[in-house]
Length: 335
Image (tube, rainbow, N blue to C red; front, side, top):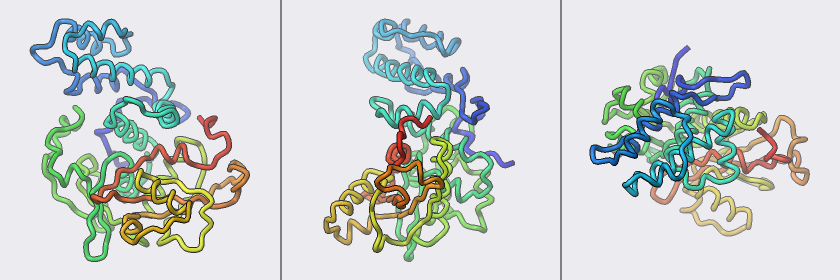
C-alpha cells in the first residue's frame, strides 16, 4: 500500500482499537523541536533546562511558575501556548477527541498552525487505505490555504505557500528531514499523472481542478464523507452540485468564513450580486444514511454545503464546521 503525508507525523502515533490516534512521546517531541521552542544561544538557564527536561520527559508536568521564571517574554508566551496545547492533547484519549473538543468549545489561543497540523494527521488516519490520489489532493484543502486561478474556463486551485515561494522555511522538523525542495513544479492532477502524487504528496505541488461538474469537487465530497464518518461516526452521502435552483435551503453549512456569509444572505433572501456569487467555488448536497438522527423540524431534508473563495482568490477551509454545523440531535454527545 502506498504511504502518503509522512510529514504529518502519523507514523509516530499509535492507532487504538477504535481507530483513533493515541499520543506518543515521540509525537510530542516534534513540537519541542520546533524552531520557536529551540532556545537560542542567549536563552536563560531556566529556558534551556526546561527544554532539555521536556525532550527527555515530554509528559513532565510544567507549572505556570516554571514558565514565569523564563527571562524572555516571547519565550514565556511560546512556552505557555505550547504547554497548554500539550496538556490538552494528553487530556484526551485520542487526537480526534482533542480536536472535537476544540471545535466545539473554541480554539482560543491555539495557533492556527497547530490546528492545521492536527487536521493533517487526523485526515491521514481517516483516509488510510484510500487509493485515489485525487481524493488525497482534495483533502489538502482541509489544512492548507489554496490560491484560486481561472484558466480557460476552468477553476484551478494550487497550494498558496508552494506557488508563493514561501515554503523555503519548513514548518515542521519532519519536512526539513524530508528534504522537500523550496521550489517545485506545479502540475494539475489528472488521470495521467495521478500516480505521481504518492512520491510527492509532502511537496504539496499538484494543483486541482475544482470546476463544477468535474472530478475535483466529487473528490472533495468523498473527503468530507470520510471526515464526518471518522470524527462523528455518522454516515452521510455528499453530492456535488452545479448550482442551487429551486431548493429548500432548510439547513446549510458554510465550509469557510466567506461561504458562511453567503449562506446567511441566501437564508435571509437577500439579493446577492454576481461578483459575490462568483466567489462560490463548490456546492454540495448532504443526506444522512439514517435521517432519524436529524433535528426533527428538518428531518429528511437535505443539508447544503457551500465552499467559497475570498475576494483575493484564496480558499481557507474550516473543517471544524462539518463537526459543529450539522443538524444532528445531541451532536455534542457524539464522541
